[in-house]
Length: 163
Image 1 (cartoon, rainbow, N blue to C red):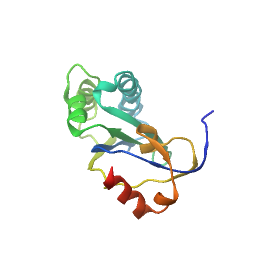
Image 2 (cartoon, helix red, strand yellow; image 1 turned 45 degrees about the vertical axis):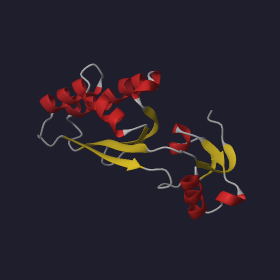
Image 3 (cartoon, one colour; image 1 turned 180 degrees about the vertical axis):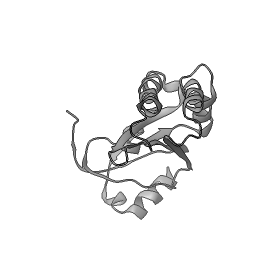
Image 4 (cartoon, helix red, strand yellow; image 1 turned 120 degrees about the vertical axis):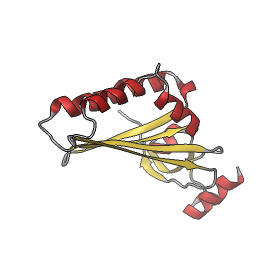
């Protein structure tokens, strides 16, 4: 079972990082042969990324929505260059999966895919976790207790700017 951290915590990152959101939306549920391979491709990619921290993946969280069937992964990366290298490198798992998707699904409308990329500078983010296990950005980087000095969102942003 995941260890709950009683109290209030924040994430501390003193260098730029990337937040990458990626997801899939099943538009035609009965088209299993179209969306199931897309869904199954993520697990081996994540396994590889976790086994090879030099690729720049810091961590992430996966979420599911049942209606319409959709996924969302919030991931954290050391840099945009690391993310792009993983996405485009023929010897990594993403590019072949992307090519299979384009061949099998393309623009037929059966499966929707999307992503958003955010480049975050130190002092340009804020996070709070109350009575939670290490989660999100704090799980991917550094979980630190909130103190009187970092009790408000503004104070946490200002603290990070000073690191």
